[in-house]
Length: 130
Image 1 (tube, rainbow, N blue to C red):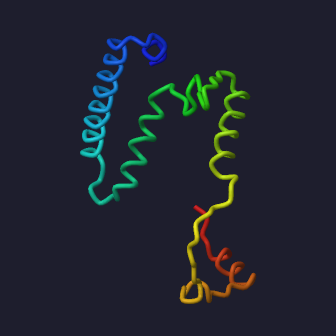
Image 2 (cartoon, helix red, strand yellow; image 1 turned 30 degrees about the vertical axis):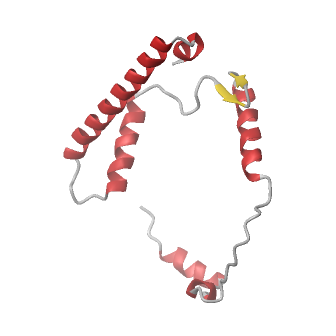
Image 3 (cartoon, helix red, strand yellow; image 1 turned 45 degrees about the vertical axis):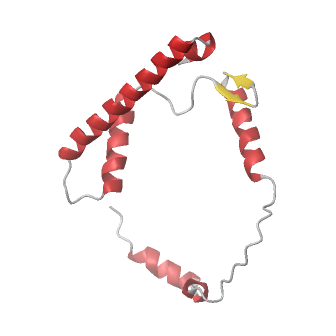
């Protein structure tokens, strides 16, 4: 990926595009094969989670890429990448929303629930650790 991005050659970008498409096809094929080995009674979310857990256990790939870019700044060191992620998320979530949405909680049945500490204690006491 890096060499295709850095070279700026159309042929390299096209090769990357083809490899990504091939990768996606391979993942879909492997996922379909995996689904045939799973109990059909299990929900789709459980099957999906088990598939990606299996993929993660078989690869040496981390979740954060080697190089991170934001606002034309590239970072490769872990501390610098984390600061860049922090800058990105602060930019996304720091400003107050300007939406003018009227939210009425008075008709929500969950709004009237009252739970005491003793209710919580009784519920937790009845949980059987496994």
